[in-house]
Length: 90
Image 1 (spheres, rainbow, N blue to C red):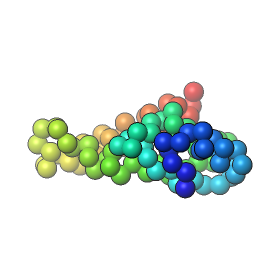
Image 2: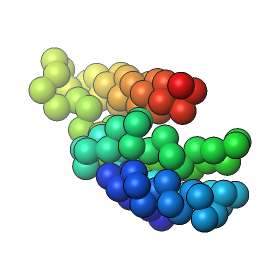
Image 3: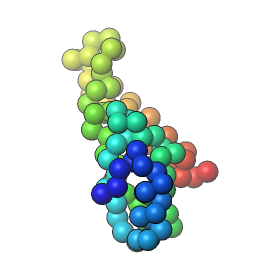
Image 4: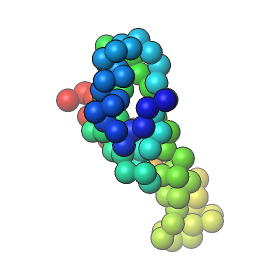
């Protein structure tokens, strides 16, 4: 496990363990974004990016949050996916 809010440490771990599958918490609510977690992905090896609060809090401040929670959570996941893919593909 390597925090997504520490991209330099993440890059060092990936360099030392190029084939290790990583758990990377910290996306979203804790401040990490795609550019921060991108070092976890290299040569087809990857990671699980944890973003619990980012996803479960996506409904806050939006219309009809209780009824539309699934929609807002899905949108948060899609946003996260596009952010990360955009950073690892560039």
